[in-house]
Image (cartoon, helix red, strand yellow):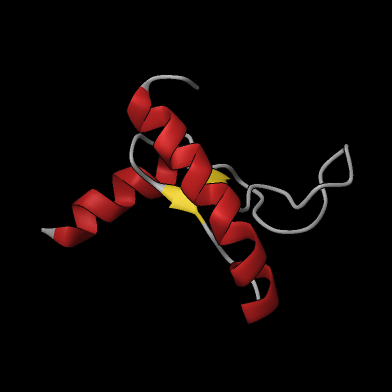
Length: 67
C-alpha cells in the first residue's frame, strides 16, 4: 500500500525543510533528500525558475557519475 511506502520514506527525510541553514542558504531545498531518487524542489515560481536549472545539473551530474 502507498501508506507504507510513504511512511518509510518520510522517516528517512531530514527533520527541517525550508528556512536558512548555517551558511545562509535555503535549507534542504533544490537538493537530494537523502533518500535515493528523491529530490526537494519547493518554493515560489521565482525560486523554481531559478533553482530548477541548478537542480537539473545536480541530477545530471549524479546520473553521469561525476558528482
